[in-house]
Image (tube, rainbow, N blue to C red):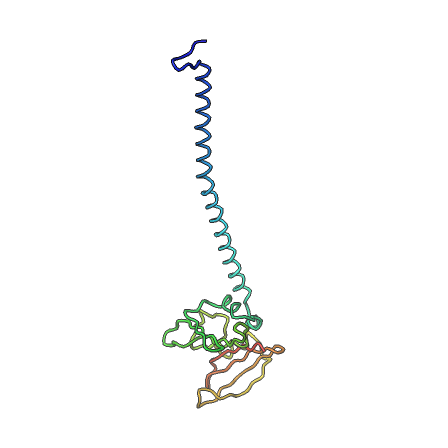
Length: 200
């Protein structure tokens, strides 16, 4: 069989060519896999993160939708649960056993919601100060006597309490076993000043 100058036959040369092509193909495939795996992992992680974000938003929306009556708020037991169902405050202050939630309202810089917390987590009461929030932020809250009765009916106890240091205010209390919702009105007015949710 005829050999070339290196002593290889045509068959040997063909074998070498095939081997070289196979090696090149193997290298290309290996490089392709090494490049493809990180991209695939990135896409998988991105999808998982997106799916988690969507599910989280869906749960938050579901929580807000399910909070469709004032009585529901009586069964929120922890501060984290409360934050999940209320509009996001612009600032939260921690003062002893109380959390003050601020909502930006023109002319009224004070907190709109005061939350009394025990054991750093469990809620004992929630006060909504209506002059420091808006109906857009809290559309579920009644603002006057007619709205209060329309939402909760006429099965309440009424009393008179001192308020604003120099006046007396009407208070109407709806009881739910050991829980209660009370409405304190502004002096000589049908407008609600404070709505308190007592969990115990």
